Length: 380
Image (cartoon, rainbow, N blue to C red; front, side, top):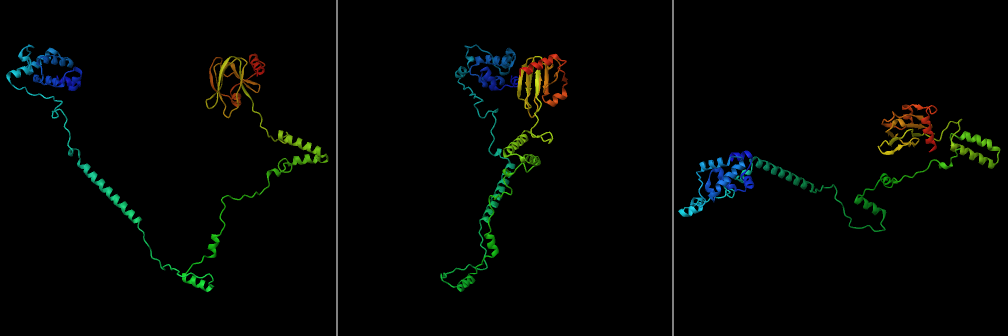
């Protein structure tokens, strides 16, 4: 039974918790010792219950227990059924069986280790070396601190003199010279005084403008347009003051609006061509910016259009019915984007990309596309 219990990986306390039988009784059954039980009438039930717990035949296990322990079943009312009655009758003293789990000297209880057994010789040597190292470091630090705190006085060649008498206010120059010779004072040199009273650098520099203000410059006499302005002024020299002012105002307005074709100077940026999506058939479109944000998403009906905004990086297009979507670049039709009913994605919405990727459409020959473009233009 002990071997079967070890096979199951159960301890005596596990069996006691599951069978509700004392661990001392389980140990007595395994040791074939019936004297541990206080009442002999419960031995058969304990043995059979323990045998069923281990998966053994209860009757076979009880018979083996009786053979090994010499136990025999007696009637419940007989004097042999009670160990205490039989002991009181004979006057013998029953052996006192202690609980093995309460006995601190039991064989299966692990023994505690002594204090000296926990100390290793190698640890003593390491501890001694560490203590010695700390002592050396502490002594070295204390020595350095003592050296730092020392104050040494170096002797001088001439001891300082003390003047016991003060020269009167009306003293002569000879007395002053004699006093200087006696005290041996060192007068500063002119170079030292020059360095002492030299002006210090300013924290904030003083800025002096080299040129006049820009408002005083006349663009009619200075710059690339000076010759043209001189000719205008020369033509208006014979006119009155009012006519001269009118000519000058017209000249400045022409310069602000832009240069003439003869000069070839452009001051205003040419407007970029406009790119728009035109739906010939109902199509779902989604326009996303370069960072992934959705700019426009809708089902465009036939004749609807969407103007693509001008951005630093061109947005991309995804459509569910590529055959029904065309591009409009300043009135010129390009497309379709793909086959009818197909899904097309990641189409760059820039004028250069559309012009290079898609073919232009002749609106005169394609009436359906021309009607959709006409409806989109009228509903704009």
